[in-house]
Length: 415
Image (cartoon, rainbow, N blue to C red; front, side, top):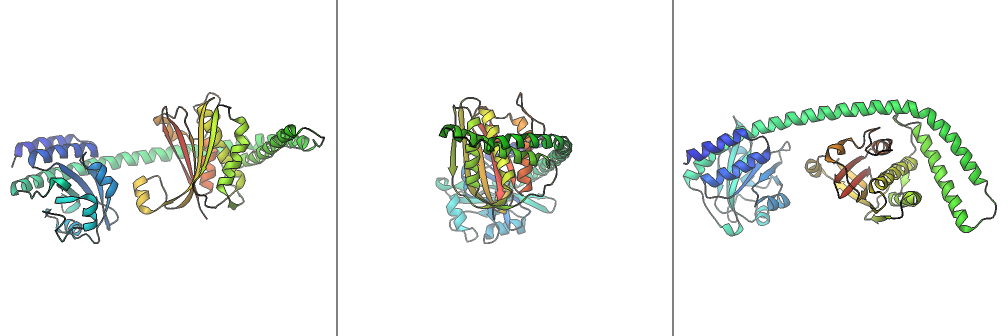
């Protein structure tokens, strides 16, 4: 046994602060103390019916995470043995060994598999996997290799526990910080609810005058002029509805609910704001699927308009805005993988622009009331979007890349 190599890598494990660090050191250690080059880590999940692949060597990573990131325990005697026996499990040839799940073996092209338990005291937290794939053929381990891997796994288990607890602490701090930000956002919404009530009342009165005068224009006029007047009247009525919504900003409204055609509302909103979009900006629409949702049409339209106008402001005079409506289903496995998702069936609206993008450090703040990066922005548009979506029991997320654009995705529960 190459004890010098094991101790050298044990010292490196002590310096590791992330899972990637642990995997990098483990790849080097396994290569130094054995003939194997493919390595992976699996952990017990809170769901006892599965184990989860959390890391793999660089050559193996694309294949492993694409084909088998979650491994069912039931129906896989090898995994069941790993989780119950707490000893090294060696499979010389996965294709012929009766303990392996042949469907998984076919997907992954496993040959020799060595699973070394990772234990903290008597508690098994996962396993260090080593082995061969495809053309590498069958390569049974020697006793010296097994002894070295067991000693290294003891060091790895302790390092993993330290890194895991450190990550949990950082996650708890992040959640506490996010909760504080949420509390501050709610306080700002309460403040805006007070400030906007008077403004909305006056604005509504002024809009009533504008609408009344537009409706009184019954004199003959050119078709183009009539179309312009009708557009202005429609916009005035929409603005009046928005003014009414300002009265309940920051409070839980008693909104009406009706069945909505989401794609149709997106199309109508695009037409409404098209006149406010520079001529050099192209607006494209795509409908992949269009499940019905229940919602307040005024609030939904308000949220869609704010998303489109936000995209317009991000682009400037030239660029492209693409809206997409489709359907998405999230099960528990998807939610564990994506983390931001919620279990259920949703209609999704994506508004993508190819503008300059949002700096990574600001993405988490884009929905905060009164927060804006625009010279003349109010910081209200995306805050209203977030609040409307929450009232409809949905969720919204933002993805952005500097120099390539930004996407806002809104998810509404389907009927």
